[in-house]
Image (cartoon, helix red, strand yellow):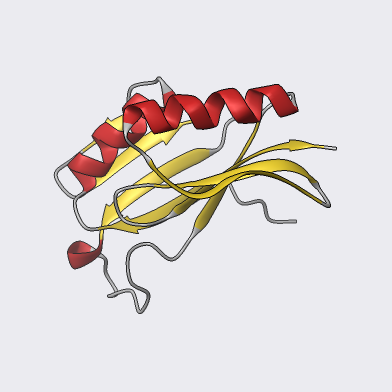
Length: 121
């Protein structure tokens, strides 16, 4: 059986995106080069940020075509996180709302990747 352990987002500028995610996640990258930045997550998974103009073989998709999901414990945490992100200047694509799976909102990273924060109901 195979497991996935890393999600890679294609970005315009790996170092700029790395700085965004370092601030957002509150942790330093575990690896950083001009064209690639990698973060470790609790539980062992990784988040990679790879500059689109250096991906080999060249990626067909443009930057900004993915969604990361970030669970939080409660509906109140969804609302607090959204307020915090707004104060940081992060673009909010979907204001906090309750959907069939729980309370959620969506922010955007510098490349337009969707960052869905949710509390499962």
